[in-house]
Amino acid sequence: MTDQIRQVATRIKEIREISEVSPETLALKLGLSTDLYLKYESGEADIPVGIIFRISEMFNVDMSVLLGGDAPRLQIFSIVRKGKGLKLERRQQYRYESLAGHFINKKAEVFMVTIDPKPEGSLPEFSSHPGQEFNYVLEGSMLTVIGGHEIVLNAGDAVYFDSGYNHAMKALNNEQVRFLAMVL
Image (cartoon, rainbow, N blue to C red; front, side, top):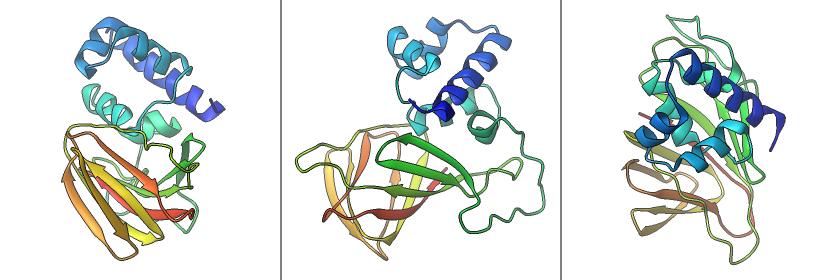
């Protein structure tokens, strides 16, 4: 795990402890086993963005507090210059860049997501979280699996879906894919 993932895990643990919620209770609310939750909280396992999003909602804190440690302050508008968003590398193939991290009381989390190709025959990693998601492909092609449906999206294509269903994305054609993701 990267140092950044460990820092996110530490912030989650601190918020949970300050709120006097046991790991068992939070795991139950997240629909996870206590063992898996504790692996997330200790930084031993990669924390899916959907789980971070759900934790931020449960504790009524902005997701950027968990990701970067700073509370958002901007309430009229927020500008993020190219390549300057709050970066989160979840695992080797996935890189997220928050494009609205400094705006307070957001209605959506907005990310630039880059996925590197995985070895041939490998399966994408699934996640689910409450709400809805919108993905718009900027570069490359990706396999998107939503609730068992497989969809190929190319540059210029978009998908809007219920993110409560298991979903995953995988870069295709042995090329990197970049897409704009909005989590609502």
